[in-house]
Length: 158
Image (tube, rainbow, N blue to C red; front, side, top):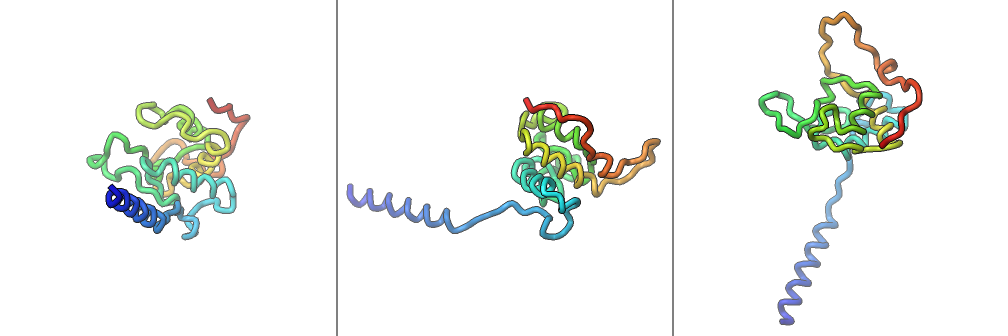
């Protein structure tokens, strides 16, 4: 009986020692200098929040995330939009965060609320669509300064 207790204690001690050896932190492209509007603290905080909460389903080089598929045939049901190829506005990001995306099928509602949601929206608005291909369109693509403008009061989170 005593031998079993010592073996169990040794195994727990080894597991504890091994679990404390490694550390991993969220890596964004802030260090590489590719983060747009990096002088804005909300953008930097939003990048870290995006990498923490959104990386599993969304791809965005500025946050160092690869959560979705690049090719349609490789997509899975839980893959969210690739934000390297899709531009977003501040308001559309807040809407998606509050309502569980645009379809409500996969993304949880209120994934981020309050200041966290606002910072993610600020980051994503400034850094999404950087690899998007401009196509012929009657409307001109708005620059980030226009897409990211906060117009009117932000509705409260649910």
